[in-house]
Image 1 (cartoon, rainbow, N blue to C red):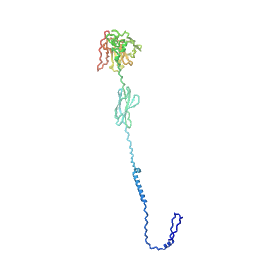
Image 2: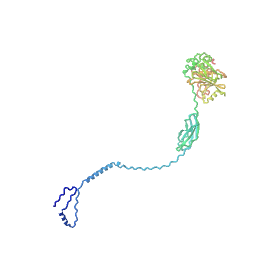
Image 3: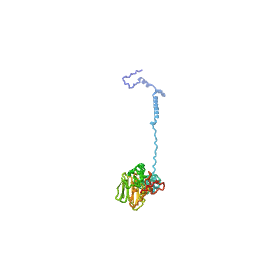
Image 4: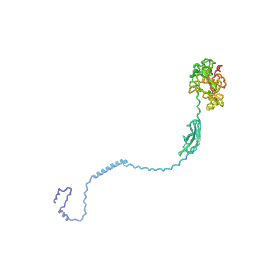
Amino acid sequence: MPEVQPTSTNAPASEPEIVVIPDKFYGAALKAKIPDAVPPVAAPLEQPKKSHALPIILAVVILLLGAGGVFVYLNRDLLFPPVVQQPIVQQPETPEPPAPEPLPTAPSDLTATSTNPQSASIAWIDSASNENGFRLERADEQGIFQGVTSLPPNSTSFIDSSVQPGKSYRYRIFALNQTGDSPASNEASATVPNLPPPPPEQPKLPPAGLDSDSDGLTDLEEVLFGTDSHNPDTDGDGFLDGNEVYNLYNPFGKAPAKLEGSDLVKSISGSIGWNMLIPKSWNMTGASADGSQATVDTGHGETFKLVVEDNPNNQGVLAWYLSRHPDVNESLILKYRSKHGYDGIIGVDMLTTYIPWGNKIFTFTYDLDGQTFINFRTTYYMMLNSLVLSGLPVINVPAGSASLPFEPSATSTGQVNLPEAVFPQTTGTAPETPTQPAQESTTP
C-alpha cells in the first residue's frame, strides 16, 4: 500500500484535505474494459436518521394555536365586537301647514245694567261657533279700555263685582281663537248706584248708673237743678224730680213752685222773636245779630244749636223736612208737641226738633259732640217746653196727657212717654205708652 504522505499540520484547519489516487491505480483503471452495459442498479439510498424536532415543533404550534383559540373564543366580544347595524331612519315628509282658522264673529247686542252699588250685569249674544273664549274689557267714563276677565267659550253673561258705587263704566267684548281676536262688539254703558245713606245711629239712653234714682234726671242733671241723685222726689211733693223739670216746675220747691223766676234757670232770646229758659250755669254763644242762629254751651262737651230757617212757600213742616232729606226712612220721623202746644216733628236722628213758625222753621239740635250717652235729654225738652215763638198762640198742655214726647212719669220711676211715629208701621205692635197720672191742677 503506498504510503500516504501526511499532511502538514501547519495547514489551516479550515482547508479541506485533498486525496489523490496513486498513479499505479490510475493506469489500471484506464485499461479496464467496460462490459456491455448492464442496467445499473441503483444502490439503495441511505435513509437519513429520523429527527424528533419536527413533532415537538408541531406539538408546540398546536398547543399555542389551541390556547390562542380558547383565548380568542373567550374574549371574542372584546376582540371582535359585533357590528351594530344602524337603522335607517326615514325622514318624515313635512306636511303642508293647514290653512289658518278664520277669526270668530264678533259678539253682538252687548248690554250693561246695574241695580245695586256692588255689581254690574253684562250680557251679549255669542255670534261665533269657533271661539275658544272671550275677553271682556271695561273703561271709566273718560278712561281707556282694560281687560276685566277672560271667559270660556259659549259664555253669554258676566257679573262685574269690581265696580265702585256712583261711577259709570263702558264695556266691550271680543271672541278669541288661535288665529286671533274678533272685532269688538258694540259698547254698552252702566252707571252704578250710590250706596244708600247709612241709617242714623240711634243715641243710647243713659245706663241706670247715670240716673241713680230713676227719676228722669241723670246724675249730671241732678247737679244742675240742686236735687238729690238718690231721692227721686227731692222736695217730697209726690212728683218725681224729672217730671217736674220737664213740665217747668222747680223740683227743689213745693208745688206749685216753677222753674221760671228761680235761681236754677235763666232766660235767653233772639230779636227775631223767640225766647226760652236754659240752666243758669249754661251760656249762649255764637248768636247772630237777629238771633236766627245761636248755640247753648253746656260746659260738658255737648251743645244745643238753634237755627231759624226760611220756609218761603209756607210748606208743612213734614213736606219741608222731606224736601231737604229725601232719602230718610220716613217711618223714623216722630211727632212732636211742646208744653205750649207747638206741634212739629222729631227728625230721624232723634236729636233735632222742627217747629213751623209762619214762613220759617225753628230747629233745635242736640249736638252730642262725641259723647256716648244723652246726658241732658230731660233738660233738652225742658228748654223746648219753655220756648215761646212770637206770633204763635200759647196753649197749655197738661202734664201726663200722653201727648208730650219723652215726658218722664210723674210717680212711676223709670217710665218715659214714647213719641208716636208720623207714619205708623202697618205691621207689628206699636210701643206701649205707659199710663201717666195727671199732674196737679196747678200745672201751667
